[in-house]
Length: 121
Ligand SMILES: [Zn+2]
Image (cartoon, rainbow, N blue to C red; front, side, top):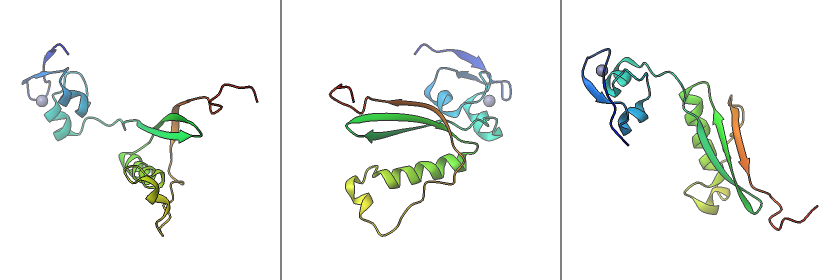
C-alpha cells in the first residue's frame, strides 16, 4: 500500500498512516502508533469474526462487544466449544465451557444455504 506520511499531534514525529502497525494500533489519523498505545487513545473494541460449520456449509458471524475483556473471554470460550485448533477432542473433555451470559451484539451473519443440493423443502 502506498505510504501516507503524517506528523503526530502528540510527539510531532513522522509516521506512515498506511503502515501495518498503524492499522493494528487504531487511533486517530494524526496519532502515531506509539502514542496511541502510550496514551490509550483508541477506545473502540474491535469486532470479532467467528466461523462455523452449519450443516454442510460454512457460515460467518461478526459480533461486537462493549469491552475488550468481554471480546477476549467470548473468543476463548468460542474456540474452546467449537474445537478451534483441537478437532473433535473439544467434545471429549470433562469440563463444560459456558459461552453464554456475555453481552454480545451481532453485526452481521453470512450463512450458506444449508440445503446443499438446492432442492426445495
Ligand atoms: Zn506520536
